[in-house]
Image (cartoon, rainbow, N blue to C red):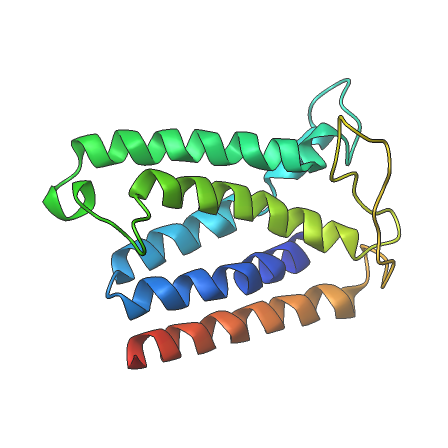
Length: 169
């Protein structure tokens, strides 16, 4: 997928998170985590710029998602130690801490990218380095403008609907 498609899938994956955060009156976290999802949407494609790493290789795996999640959990831990009282004592939902939310957002951002790429014929090796198997739904090519803009529209709609419903609850 191209950038618009990846943004759309990121927003689609983020929509339930936005709903929960808004429903528990944490609009501040919804804005920050939504921004982080969009900021990280293209992270796995850094492999284009790293010599010796093939495209849709290690950065397009669940292992990379876990690594990015761990980094964001560390950032969440650091932020909760230096932030104002509301952030440092925040338990987001069901005992989920800011560090755990950081992990979820970091990992989800990469997983959303992988899901979007799995829609294309080239597919993704989710289980690298454990397996060389590529998974693909093969629905459309990555350069399909209708698919990219369609996914973007669906993501925007889902996030807007989640925001509306989350605030209404």
